[in-house]
Image (cartoon, rainbow, N blue to C red):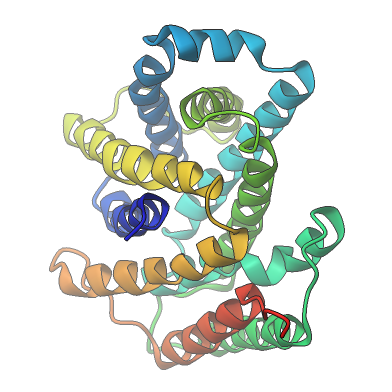
Length: 294
């Protein structure tokens, strides 16, 4: 297996642990989002700053690229704020499937901005993905046998997915000219700073969490942040976005299995989550697939 494919495979396994680690915390979701990005920034900073080459590259980043990276950081902050909050209002399976559905929502953006033309198969995939989202959300709404799923939680997950898609698109553009650790440091630092006023606005504490919560979030930052997001960012420079999106199909499967298997979480997906999720994953696959002309 080539290094980019090995890296993205490891990243998907790593991010699959994020949701169950979040649910293992007692801290408010926005506080978790802040400390996850803060700890990830602290881990990445030495990797970017200790090497003379890394410091030189940071200083040489053009202003336009730096501004783009700050904007990507703001989008990343929105993604974590929305998605982590959604996990307190809906099941892991529904949340992770919906947040992973971003190729369905951002494919038209990629079509017009990055000139990645959509084939007829891709358009069909978008339609199937949207139908799956409708099935999952409408089916679970008012489904009394599974009270974890709420309309609010599903909407938050979808918005978090849209932010994730924009984050990936922006990363594809900037990563063509900026190496992974300087890119990650600027983006993660911008996301950390953006989450401070968000936490203050919604009354989420920025200190005084349980020691256990700090340790869990540190583990989250190391596994899902460094091994997950940073390896994924590195692979974006070597793998087409379509291929990267297909790899992402592994995250909802891994996260859902972990949420069901771990006894302190033990979430069993509803029939609508399983059915709608399967349709969404098929839609994502077809949306991301590229047909090679003969």
